[in-house]
Image (tube, rainbow, N blue to C red):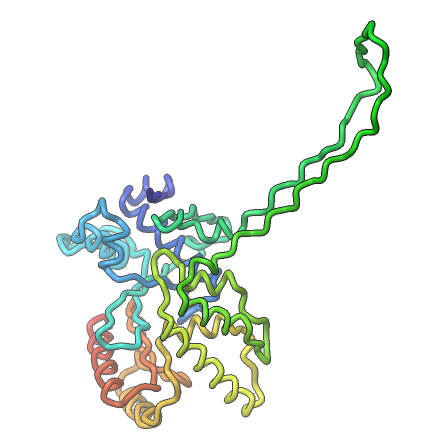
Length: 333
């Protein structure tokens, strides 16, 4: 059984269907943040394909979901010629592969929609109850108190005509030991468990090592299960960047956050074409104000359109990604 939730005040203002989608984005952005996802361009994100979203909301048609997303990101739908509301969400694309059109979503006004007072209700999926975060927080059962408490005042005693028997010394029964919190390692496949063990045993030079529950959450997240191969690559990228950081006498403090970012951006090990890709991007950035360069990426920021393309990929693949992102930025700009 699956449960979906919404805020009543939001439903009154934006409608029931919009309220359900808004809560969906609130929950998964908060979930990603708890699991170490870093901000991108000053915003916190979640990503999901339209196919996955249609499967998550079987009571909404694909066209209806598209209309609701247009309403939340543009303030109008394809059937409307005028804007009926201020956009709530912004759309980004941080995918590495050019054919991967998975949409990334973030709230434009995070202070309003991701405030500290917001406490998202867990979305429960069919996978083992789906409540991964709440199950991790379950406390061991309280040890029962075996002591007998009696009041000294106002106690009535029952007299018996039979001779009193010698009372035997009372023995206190042993309290059951507290149960250990449930481990999710047993739910992993053999390949996942092998990588899980490798990750949690790794001792980083800076910061804390990874925790078992956090690694399990990457594999068992109800909506987006992580690939073993891509996670292995992200781990290798982390170790490679640690060596580079040591040479520069700098540090990488957050191992988990770095691996999450490397995974979500699809980073790979250093490629020989990186310098040529950067040179191409620098040339184009002089022609377009919405293009900026960072150490590892070229950024396109045109109104609500935000996309990053990594330098570290084969040149032909970079050119394809770059040109498509450039065309989208021109449309939004």
